[in-house]
Image (cartoon, rainbow, N blue to C red; front, side):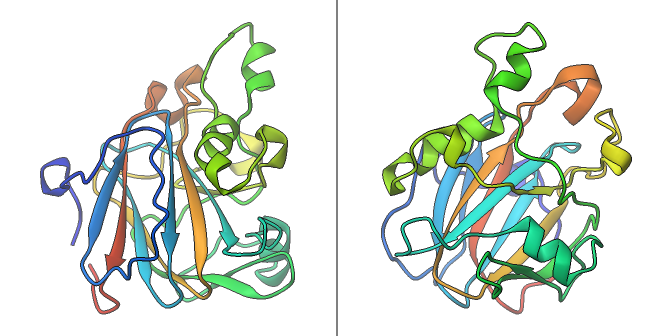
Length: 225
């Protein structure tokens, strides 16, 4: 199925919400991330989750860590690029962590355009543009991961930039996702994830305005388009 704003039932809209319990997601649960904000959530090994673009042209930074490792074992774009020979992850491919083990598997993908090269946008990026106080993906991830022990933006790892179409480092409006598009993952470890609804709105990027996305956890393994 493709998602629409009307079909998404928000379980919470708190921009800084985190989910700390170890509840098994026997039923799908949805959290809407307000534009330019972040969300942290836990996923048990074997469970599926989706990142859904509700309005289109919105990039999402996704970072992940293995639980109970003190944020040391983490999703690594460098290791993933190495194993995928630099190509964009396709359905069936694995995303790797920094001790050379697969961490996530791509199960379904309606967009198939993502980025593994850019860091999260960060406060100094906007300050150098003359903009103070602008939200950033690094700030969002640090904010929602603070309860797990993260200590500011310098602890943020390079993310998978979901739905980001930036060939040759082209930060300009080349949107790839449409309303209702999503990517679905299977967790290969007990993990905690952080997703940032990218606030970068300069020069038409993200459609010129950061908009809401949804995280759907507990997706049935047999659920497909």
